[in-house]
Image 1 (cartoon, helix red, strand yellow):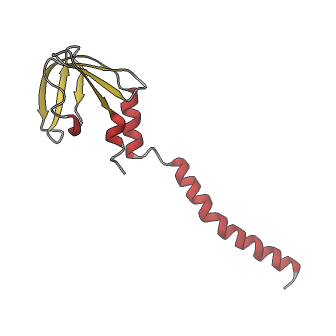
Image 2 (cartoon, one colour):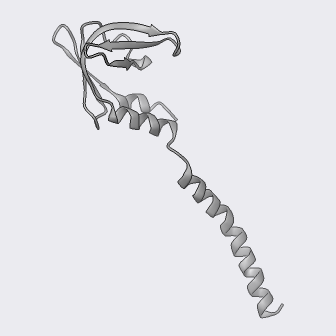
Image 3 (cartoon, rainbow, N blue to C red):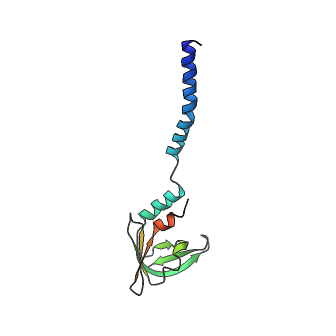
Length: 122
C-alpha cells in the first residue's frame, strides 16, 4: 500500500468511527429535557400562597385532585399527597424551592418535598 492510500484509508476509518459519536452528541444536545427534568423545572418555578377554598376531582384530567385557593389559583395535587391537604389548610411555596408547606387548621405544619416524588421516576 502506498503512503497516500494508507492516509486515505486511515481518514476513512477515523471518519467512520467519529460519525456515530458525533451524531449521538448532536442528538443529546438538541433533545429537550426528560420528563423528570421537565417536572422538576415546573415544580421549582411554581409559587403558591393561599388557603384551600375547595377541593374537587378533575375527571377530564385522569380524575386528579384539584385545589382551589383563596386567591383563585388552581393546584393539582400529586397522588402521593392526596389526603394530606384538607379544606381550610393554607399552602405556601416559594419559587426555586422544592418544599410545599401545608399549614393545617389545627396549627400544625406539614412539609411536602417534591424531590420525594421525583426520586421514584426513572
